[in-house]
Length: 450
Image (cartoon, rainbow, N blue to C red; front, side, top):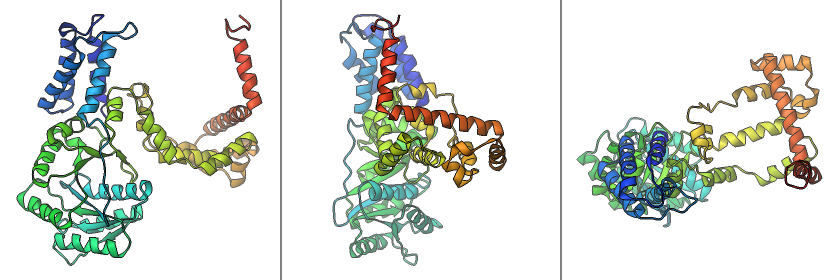
């Protein structure tokens, strides 16, 4: 995501020469290159031109502090303007009402039905809502069945009426069903088309008029770049939607849609789809996205993902086991599961400041833990609980059972035992104090050994 744009922007800022002030002369070439980078990322031409003009206007004449280079100051101004371009702050998302009603719109193939389920999962797990999905796509073969499958995946009920071919009537009945069955949010999945057409627009306009949704969301595929922005504009002209869900932002997208859509359509991006799993839907934060585009990482989102998968009770139990040096392979497996729940490993690495650039050419497979898990699962329950029992003959059996080599098994067990020792040392406050004291004594100029 945005890798190419991030690299181009970084190169652009290195062009900036001169000291003391950002001037018309020393900023011209840099901003020309920034504009080219934005256009290559499929940002709308008018938006790219306006953006660089605004950056130039804000930057010109600013005094450069001794500790800050002109390039660094321009990065700061660019960051602020990128944040502003994408909406400054996260957009409000309303689910009030009895029930709250959300209308989903978009072209066929944009991921609308899948993201209807993702939104239901988000509302259920993070907002404590009891959503109902309503199937109003009466045209596409198996569309209703697909929504039922999605509903089952996220543990949410689905209302459908396969004999009824009137989507307005189905939507109304779905809302009545929600009221009667204690659902406080209704998400209406409508028909998509391969292109914007009059019949489609008329139908979805009628649905909106009939159900009066609190939120009308347009689902658009980020991979389509400027086409996504143009389609959003056509939909908005007719439907006047409230916001956008940008899908496939984890794919090979150049970023044009994310950077252009707010300025062209004047509607906020509310959510982004960042993966295939049903929990891979994130609130869109303009500042955090600007951080990532400029290679600054997104440590806040990383911490939030960790907190979502953090179990306090499990953490307490784990702390006790570490202190007693009884941390075992079952505990290790649980930690791996927690990491995997947080999402794509390369995306997680990219959230750490500076790591995105380092990991650029490194391929981190989501199955990176597969070999480790295979080795651990090939151990007996008793061996997992008591790693010190695993002798040579057992290691041979484990290697054979996991499809790995004895060397790989040896390496994992060795690393595990060393990690366990370090964890035990760090859990002991007295040991930590001794370690810090020894470290202090060994540093020059700290009153210890030279």
